[in-house]
Length: 256
Ligand SMILES: CC(C)(COP(=O)(O)OP(=O)(O)OC[C@H]1O[C@@H](n2cnc3c(N)ncnc32)[C@H](O)[C@@H]1OP(=O)(O)O)[C@@H](O)C(=O)NCCC(=O)NCCS
Image 1: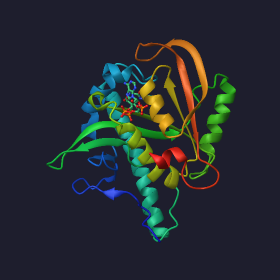
Image 2 (image 1 turned 60 degrees about the vertical axis):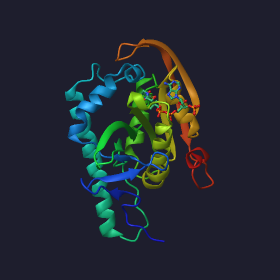
Image 3 (image 1 turned 90 degrees about the vertical axis):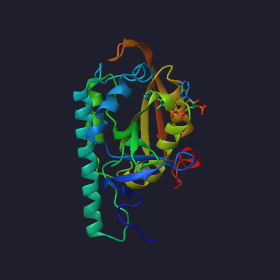
Image 4 (image 1 turned 45 degrees about the vertical axis):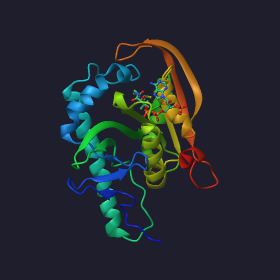
């Protein structure tokens, strides 16, 4: 069977954006690229106590200018992936499906009855920059090697980060959204085979999202520090996911 190089992206009927839809029971949630008008919603969610206490490395308070930068950079990356897909479609319209440099969709939106939607949160994949490696030379070597790998290389170490608007926490949405993006895009279209994430010790919600997808704790870095959001933390867990060798999805990803 042959597919368009855009498979399985759909085109948004009113904005023309690429999007993916979550499966039932969350099929009123779609994932699209970011939009400029998302900025006030991003700012509100990231400054909420139940979100910012689990994030480190972002600017706090998180201001409109930070949201604008994120939207501009993320949209540029999305446009780059769409460009790669258009080139692939011209060169090999009947497949095989080309490997691309990232995921063109990142923003979760709840679609309401009149067809408009509400910003709910985001998921982002990026090449890992090994924040837990203390030795500077070793860290630079790992980052340079990871950056130098060609797109689709199964040895690329990917990193994932995400957040969701507080009133929707604990309903299974992020587990479903991350599983959907990994199954439909990261694994088949980015060639992702190794992924990692860091969670602050005590962030049960994030840890469980990852564990349910087959990630396991590979290291716990115990270091008391104050995060960029001003929280005193005890350190963080590093979680890894690796696709099984014998083909098919990781059990965790396919079963959710
Ligand atoms: C992490 C986060 C995205 C999880 O999203 P979510 O949609 O609420 O997650 P799910 O509903 O899929 O829940 C996944 C698991 O976490 C548990 N969980 C969710 N929120 C929780 C909370 N606040 N406290 C404890 N457990 C929680 C759920 O019970 C579920 O576990 P279970 O299957 O064992 O019952 C969300 O809590 C969030 O935005 N947190 C702040 C930002 C953040 O931590 N980002 C990740 C940084 S590493």
